[in-house]
Amino acid sequence: MILFVLAVFMFVFATSCGPASSANAASDSTTAYIENKGSDTIVNLALAWAEKYQEEHPNVRISVTGGGSGTGIASLINGTVDIANASRQIKQEEIDQAKSNGVDPVEHVIARDAIAVIVNPENPVSQLTLKQISDIYSGRINNWMEVGGEDRPIVRLSRETNSGTHVYFLETVLRLNNKEDKTLFSMDTLLLPSSEGIIAEVRQNPNAIGYDGLGYVPDDLKMIAIATEAGGAYVLPSIATVNDKSYPIARDLYMYTNGEPEGLLKEYLDWILSTEAQQIVADLGFVPVN
Amino acid sequence: MEKSLNWREFIITRLIKASGYSAIIFVALIFVFLLREGLPTLGEVELKSLLSIRWYPIEDYFGILPLITGSLIVTLGAALIAVPFGIGTAVYISEIAPRWMREILKPLVELLGGLPSVVLGFLGILVLSPYIRILLDLPTGLTALTGSLLLGGIAVPTVVSVAEDALDAVPRAYREGAWALGATRWQTIWRVTLPAARSGVLTAVMLGVGRAIGETMTVMMVTGNAPVLALKLGSLFSPVRTMTATIAAEMGEVANGSTHYHVLFFIGMVLFLISLGVNIAASSVVFRAKKRAERILS
Image (cartoon, rainbow over all chains, first blue to last red; front, side, top):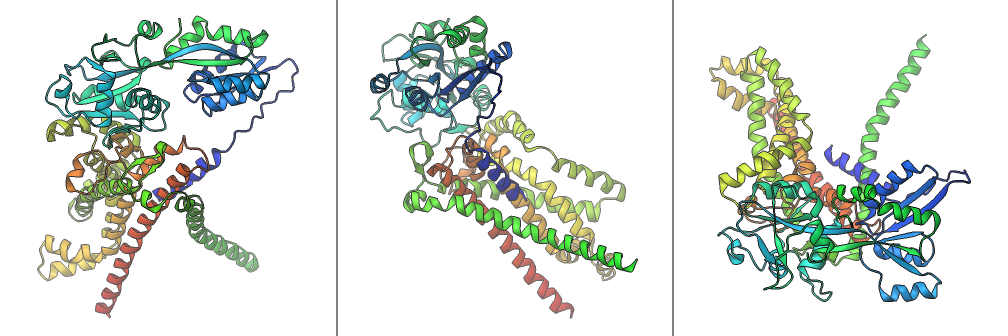
């Protein structure tokens, strides 16, 4: 019976995974459309902005789709979208490609994404280098004693592999931004399906280490100060240290437009940098840019 | 008058027949669908890497062995809890408890069966897993054992409800016969009532195990989901990743038609086959037992 339900569920899922029809064509000629596509990291934020903005401006229709930063930028180059969302900077070859297509990509930093490494408040360890965190997660360090803590086993917690945060953590921390590095998470890393799962486990387990978007970390957990290199300054994550780029596990999130935005597009992008829109950034666990 | 009755009869029998066949057709269709989406895996992933011990789909490591062993160990643990507790409770409700207590207990147990599994998952994360970590001095409380305990709890009501019905259906004359021969209450239960209700009790166990192996939400929340090969008994005390949790966690983000997508359906297929195997094995046991009983009686 359960299997049957599961199978039906999978069937429904599979059929609903097809391309979404973009059939919200209001025939009203005064309605303006903005096509917005790209990074899956940003897609929820972009959706929240779009919803809020459409509430206030009923004559504007914004369609938001994910697909990844590369997809978004490719669509901008092909001229099929007005705004491309990207969680990385545009590459030189993409700029060249755009230029040859008569497209001039202009960059807008719209939010920042920082990841805090968290431990139980009982854990005496309060600072680590990036290399140490990498060694912990790849399984080379297995006891808190090795990084100056108590004699306790380390329980590694991570988000599921489908989470953008997981991939970003893998590339930036485990592989230390080295594209050639093929280090993987240690096999016994616990993959939890939600931020709440990680937070609940870190809260009650002094052996645990976890990571999460800076905005999601509650006050009763301990954030680790991180140094880029051994001997460097240890920096705690905060809106200030993320914005002055001294905290190492953080990145800018971008929107790209074709040329300097004008008219409606400019209004929308200006609104995105407003206090109201940046509050949504904070609500979703990202770091506001100002 | 008679003619219209015949007509009605005709339609009703056809309807009943159709709904009977539809159950078979649905299962067959689902299996065909699973095959269609899952079998391409064999062309896309080498058998050797499919049977490896590393599951990390975003870098194309598709070893499903940790997931299969994970599901099996959690289910085995759950069965070890649900079967004795479930049958024991069923025996108590049906054979020992006074009438008034039976009328309270049975609906209560069935109410327990209606508890949403996500609620149990929350209880598992917030209460059970910290307790298990401290009690057994483990690195973490998110283990196969935690999953087994909760799944056992989920399966118990199913086992109790079906087994109690089966015990209840045993004619009173059987028990009276046993008592007349001087059998004690325990001897009557163990030697007469339970064997007579054997096929129903076995069905109860099967349904309970089926409920446990197919359960998703609870295990996803409490077993830690680390894809580690679980072959030793000690694996019960470490995190595991089950097949159902893998499908549920990853299906939402996977690109339609990709290798990862096909592998997830392949896992669904394996799950289906395991559950089918359990069912066939159990019903063949029931069938054989029945034949023997018939032989003795005739």
